[in-house]
Image 1 (cartoon, rainbow, N blue to C red):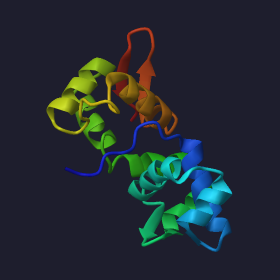
Image 2: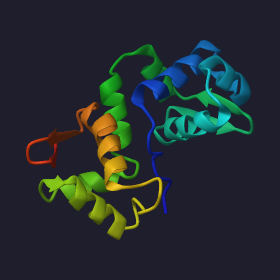
Image 3: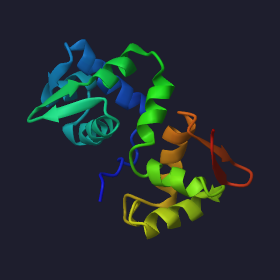
Length: 158
């Protein structure tokens, strides 16, 4: 199974981590990054995983290094476009796009689809509520997805 995007990771936190790495000549030790970001290492790890999955950084032993895509993100140019394009390649967004290409779905329907396809496991960390939060935080903010609160349905943005 492909790596799953960490639940409860915010877009602004990922952008902040990438900016800190860029400001340190594109490479920083994870311990120094935790100090500069004022994050516990345990809280930093999901941010690093999200940044890595999105293609903004690479992790080598105890260092985080920015990628060319991360450089673009840190510069602030085309941020939404860069994030949207990156999301289409990782789970659960990739499978969400596939499900929504067949028509709009509720969060519960998406959760059931993703769970049935072993993309978004039903466990303590992953639930329909955490999926809703993740899709709102990343999918809607990047203009990849649209959410109608009245009908509680998701659609793809063309």
